Image (tube, rainbow, N blue to C red):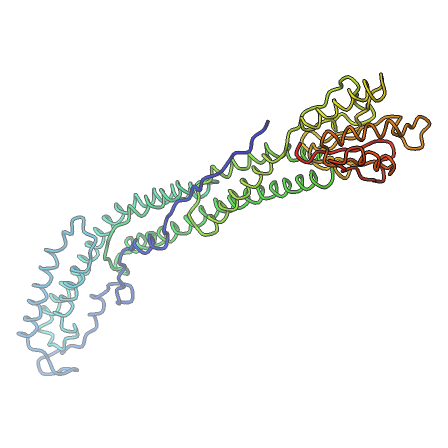
Length: 454
């Protein structure tokens, strides 16, 4: 006998995605407000200057000593910046930019009104500024190298995540693991864009990878969850067919309903096996699906276990099975079979010697509606036929009918149905301790008896 005993356990991963994402800080990309480029030296060209000691087109004219003071201050700031240029593996550009700003401030604006004779000092200031720009580019080139080294593992993990997101069908654990591996390669940095083109491209790629990882995670888990819901719909379709089969068993045909119910079990268990292999995120919807699925499994299992299995009737002395009745209908409870055999024996030996009763039907093996009968659903009913019971027939014998009916009442049947009221009344009179015979239409050829507690 096929079994339904398949409760699925929730295989859900309790992963607080929102909290996890909030805990994963991305690096600090700082904006440089110099129109995206560092071209300080070019901004210092075309400054107003005096062309002679006596004639100038600007004022006030700066003294040579002031220009030398600015030059020395700029040189000092440059030297500090130079000493800081060996950044090692650092990814923090803030100290560098602070020192660069110190150098900028030391320029004191960079627009100097000076005499042509002091041009050498101004050129020295400008040269140092140009060198500072080159040095800044070199420093941020080193930052780009460092950044590329740190970014490489994130690229790899993002590709892995994409693979899992695209290929996962029923398990989010690999997606989650890959997602965590990606963020596990995350690193802290404080860098400026708009200074080094290579670094700008790397920073852009970093942001793109971070965004892609979240998108891939959502796409992958959504794909698994969509498959999970699709399988749950398949399962629910099978479940609905179970209910239809049960209704057919109860109201239309017990044998067909039972067989239809039974035929669904392999596909039902197969669907449950598929569902049980899913690993999904713990969400209210997924929890609901698991709960509903287990509830339906319990319902189907209980229905399956509730189907009875009755004993096959056998011919015996004085009792034969009607060859015109489907053999599917010759199943019943033992007490009913015993009484039918006893009735046949008594009929054969005492009531109509040498003759036999014909059993025209009991119940289906597994119960259920047994057309054309209104009853015969639960192994408590039996129809017995004899030519002597056929009201109006040429061999009808009322005396034999009364004796048979009285015998059944004396055996404790809970009800006996027969069309002839005379036989019914006489049998009840003969067995006053159990006067349960009743007149019923459609029973002109046979007697129906049942036992409530068979």
